[in-house]
Image (tube, rainbow, N blue to C red; front, side):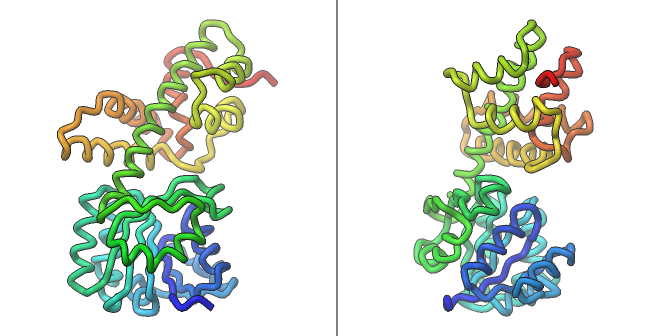
Length: 300
């Protein structure tokens, strides 16, 4: 049995399968979540439920977070009933959330005052990767703490990258997200234009997918989502919009102009304003479809 006891807070679409993989890996697991149904499900599989993040922290050597927004991370770590009220000296917080590097550093500083460590460890690979334990994990923080937490990281990810000091993992993830937004916005434009100009949507997709215009986002979003008219969220427009704006903040802080990233953020803002924020990022195609009167769908 592994020596480290683990807490996991944030049992959503990513966090629940990730925590399940930690539990399957043999680590004693304590879980907490706003929605108790997820806690009860994992408790039925052998996890110990906790009422608050502080209670989970008091029972754990390593406390994992998988939360949607920077403000949520701050509340769960530093707020009333938060980790900081129960965390033990020598414990490590592993934050799988996608947040900005400035938030990572401020949370790390607050935890350091309690003699606890912090690793920013955002992930990429979606719900499929979370379930399979094949995520890419990008880690920033003290290298000794990283090495101590590595056995847990290896239960959720296939490729574990140590990026450097606190905040470096967040920067890596946000640069990935900028490219997700840029690539998908471009693919949406090209596909809508091609269909509007008279090319069959399925033919257009298959040809581009075999040519130099291919991209991961083209393959992710078109065959199983857009072409089928299916937009149930695996990763929502709202969340990528948040990530794009966090990436733009990194650009501002470092004095780097980000023209394409800013345009992509506006495209996703348009989708949110039109009511598609809770749908999958594939729904970014919908505003241009409406504007042109052209739907990018496979023929029945």
